Amino acid sequence: MSTDAAADRPHSRDEIETHEQWQFDFWDETKKIGGWVHFGWNPTTQSIWYVTIIAGFQRQVTLIAVPDIPIKQLSRSLEFRAEGIWAHHVCEKPLEHWTVGLEAFGVVLDSTEGGLGNQWGKRIGVGLDLEWESAGLPVTFDEGFRQKCLVSGELLLGSEDFQITATGSRMRSWGSANSSKILDDAIRMPIKLDTPSGDFILDTGLNLGAGTWSGGIRM
Image (cartoon, rainbow, N blue to C red; front, side):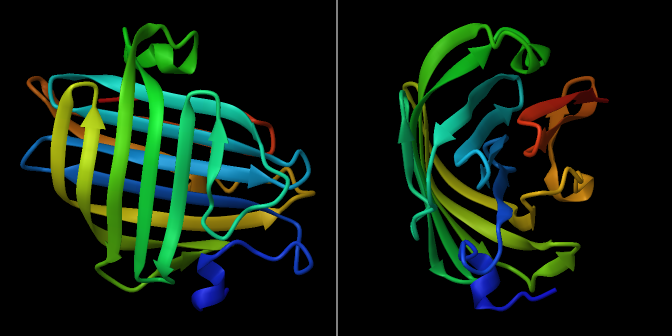
């Protein structure tokens, strides 16, 4: 499995038809806030699955989930737009530096479990302008790799403005567009949070082929 520069960018449609996935996560220990961005492109349906979660200590979870953004072909900047969302994900230097931008409306969930159901809550503006810079070599797994990173930039959450200096990671994976195989290790998306009663993990997973996601709270 290659982790050369080409592996960090979208595959050519002439090369192989694949489900393409990217994930970016961060946790700012000083500000006790973090989140992740995850999206996947299905060449069969020509659509993007997009999920962002922002969570923190003594803070309700903010969710942005757009399950079906029409995209015929991935652009080099991995930019897409839909009602209430604009996002781009720029590979400044493969395996070293990515920029993630987001302007969207999210929902401050009444309960975390609601994110997997009706997604009821207060509507709020969310903005990201964050940089992921490598802090280690990529670690490979079947059809992809993970990489530890340092994360910096700006997070806007309603009227709040956070200057982020964080640790984080990113994930890049791909798989056959004709396969229903779930690369479970590749698409788990956990965030560890500190709470007054102890640690818990918001743990979700995406099944790109089926177009569904699931998860919950693990104490």
